[in-house]
Every structure is written in structure tokens, then in C-alpha cells.
Amino acid sequence: MKVMRWLVWRDMTLALRRKAEVLTTLLFFVIVVSLFPLGVGPEIDMLKEIAPGVLWVAALLASMLSLNRLFADDYVDGTLEQMIISSQPLALLVLSKVLSHWFLTGLPLVLISPVLGMQLGLDGDSIVILMLTLLIGTPVLSLIGAVGAGLTLGVRGGGVLLSLLILPLYIPVLIFGSGAVDAARSGLGVDAHFSLLGAFLVASLLLAPLGAAAALRISLD
Amino acid sequence: MNLPEFLDMGRHAFYVWGSYGVVALFMLLEVVLLVLKKRSLTQSIARLARLNRG
Amino acid sequence: MRIFTKAYWLQLSSPKAFYPIADKSIPWLIAATILLSLVGLYYAFIIAPIDYQQGNSYRIMFIHVPAAWMGMWIYVVMCAYAVIGLVWNTKLSNMMAAALAPTGALFTFLALWTGALWGKPTWGAYWVWDARLTSFLILLFLYFGFMSLRAAIDDPRRASRASALLALVGIVNIPIIYFSVKWWNTLHQGASITLDKAPTMESSMFTAMMLMTLAFFTYTFAVAFMRVRNEILEKEKNSAWVNEIVGSDK
Image 1: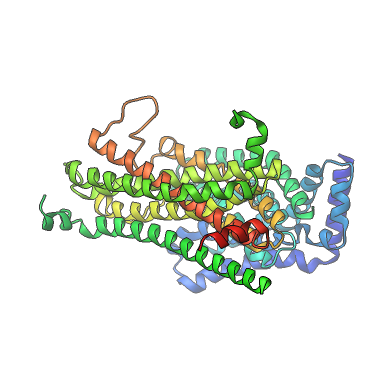
Image 2: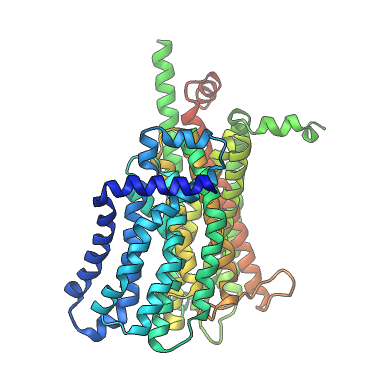
């Protein structure tokens, strides 16, 4: 446990020394969402309809973009190898790294989503649901993404390949995340969506660190 | 069913033959590509062997 | 008696031992495929009657369902070979996994294609975003991911292991596809063929479907063996036994 806390602290300190990287993900999210009114027209009724999907897809893309950096820096300077051969369970170390990654990329998305939701015409209740789905969903994205990042470490065409690999796995999260907001907007129940999102979170918390650890071992053998 | 009826498939000709046609086409294509690949592989191996011997 | 020794089976896991087996089986498998398809198509078009609801378009079922089954089944078998390759590091298992992937992707695509062409006259739409169709599309993407990852990594050992892990992560999609019609209200119909009850369709249709499924089965083996054969030739092109075989092919 102490190791985890230390690792999270270390990763966040390192990342915050280069604030630019943290901000790029956030800015990407904002810009992508803003592109839609420009592209499809400013009619607020239509924007309201597509808002859940747009916000979720943008969150997905922003998450994916930042995944490359999850292991890359430690891989390049040899720290990753040290982590693998250390006596600490690799899965826990991976979990710590994913946690820091989420603090820096996922959580900001959750916090800024109300502003963007309002931009697209969502009402207060839908925005709350949006924030909740992102709160539960973005960690899942980071966790699943970690497996992909581990597999594509140092591979040519890394970033795009990573996206190709994990997007199919992201689709269920997208469906239920944006589906919940859609349901809220229409006044229907969101319980089913949230149960599934919760199930995804639990499953990925348990399995993804193990998968990512295996992926790292394969990549660094 | 006689031949014109068969080909027409009750106005569903496009769908039925579009399906069966594409399936047959791709499966044949896969086999042909693999046969061609084998041929080119054996030819290059034989060529290399000749060069090594000679 | 040899067949009951562990040594026999371990030996089979070497490309050199497997090559003649693949080589000899391929013509038989292709012959079986052609025969089964011809009989199956005869049943599908001549013997099976016209459907009172769907007319003749339902005949697409005789290639749509087998293709869908193969798409799913090949993924499972591919994962099995991948696991064997991961755990025991046998070259041949990794080759089989790689050899199956393109055929699996092909059948998945064909299932989606024929499904779209069947859906249009039946439901009025080429595509709907319901649970089964969406998860089947995801299956296609998973195949592509498997093949891309394998192609992107230069080191063959890392390439096989990484793609194997990826395939395993995606296996969760298979039960989702299978149960999707039960768990969600989907447009796609439920299972008419189950393991514990008699099929709910007319017997000639059932026969046609089984024959086409078997045909696709033998086809898959034939094509996978052809691919493995090519892969072996490529990997072992400098070895003496390959040169002998190529020499004697003339």
C-alpha cells in the first residue's frame, strides 16, 4: 500500500512538472466538443440530441491520446524494467500508474464536462448523470487502455495502433455511458446503465492490472 | 422452380445472389491467393537452391 | 501404439513434422468442402421450400448462419492456440493462431454482409445498432486488431505473445454475442437451434444449414493449413528438409 501511494505521488509530481502535457488532454476534449456545433450547425435542439454521444466520444478520444505516455517515459529511462523485476507485485504498480494517469487525464474531463454539457444545451439533471457516467467510465477507459499501452510499448505506429486495438473494447463503455445520459434526458431510468458501468469498473479494476502486467512482461522480455 | 424463377428468387434476386455471390467470390479469392503465395515461395526457394548449388 | 505416447504429440508441434500432414490433408479437405457445398446448396435451393413469410430471401440463412458460427468459433479456436503458444511456447500453435485469424475475419465480414442483405427485405434496414449486430462488428474489429498488432511487431516471439494476450482480452465478446439476443430486446431473432431441444425449423432447412456449416468447417481447416504451410516454407526456407521437398515437387 505504501508503495502504491509513493508511486502515485511520484508520477503526479513528475507529470505536474510538465503541466503542458496534462493540459493538452483537457484542451483536446474541449476543442473536439466545440468542433461539433461548428460542423453540424448551432441549432440547440439538435445539439441536445447528440450531446451525450459527442461528449462521450470526445472523452474516449482524449483518454486514448494520453495513453501512450502511460508507460513510455518509464520504458525509455529503464525504470519500467526495474519495476518488473522488483519484488512488488507488478499488477499493483500498474494500478498505481493507472490511478495517477486517471487523476491527470480522466478526472479533469469529469470536472470540465458540465461546462461543455451546457454548451451543447444539456439541462442540469442530464449534466449530473453525465458527470457520474464519466466518473465511473473514465477509470475503465484508463484501465483497459493500460493493457493496450503495455502491448504496444515501443512499437512502430504506436499511437494509432493502440487506438485500433482498444477502441473495440471501449465500445460497450461508450454505449452505456452515453446511453445513460440519453435515458436521463428522456426521463427514462438509468439504473440498468449504471449497474453495467459499475460492473465494468469492478471487472476492469480486478482484471486490467493483471492483463497490463502480463502485457508489460511480454513487451520487455 | 424453373430457371427464370430460380434466378429471380421471388424479386429477391439482388439480395440472395448478392449474398451467395460475395461469399463464393471471397472464399475462392482466399484460396487462389494462398495457392499463388505458395507457388511464389517454392519458386524463390528453388531459385535460391540453384544459386547455392551452382 | 505410437499415437498414445506424449512424444508423438510433442513431435507434432514442430513445423517440420506437421508440414507433410498439412500438405497431404489439404486436397482432401478441399474436395470435402466442394462436395459438402454442392449437396448443401442443392438442399438450400432445390429441396428446401419457400418460406411463407419471407419468400426466397430466407435462403440467405444457409450461408449467413454458418458464416456467423465460423466467425465466432474460429475466434475461440484461435484463442485456444494462442493460450497454448503462450504457455508452452510451441511455434506451431502460434502459427495456427495466426493462420486462422484472416479466415475468421473473413467469415465475420461475410456474416455481416449477408446479414445486411437479408435484413433489408425482411426488416427494411441494412443495419441496426442492436446488441448482437454491434457485438459482431466488434468481433470484426478484434480480428483486425489481432492481425495489426501481429504485423506491427518485428520480433516474432513478442508478436505472437502480444497478439495472443490481445485475443484473450477480447474473448469476453464471444459470450456477449451469444447471449445478446437473450439479455436484450434485439431485432435479431433468437436461437432456433439449441443443444437440448429439437430444432424449430423444417428438416430440409436444418439439413441444408448443417451441410453448409460442415462445408465451411472443412474450408477453414483447408485454408488454415494452406496458410501454415506457406508460413513454414517462409520461415524454414533455408533448411535442408524444405529444399528437399521443394526439389521433389517438380
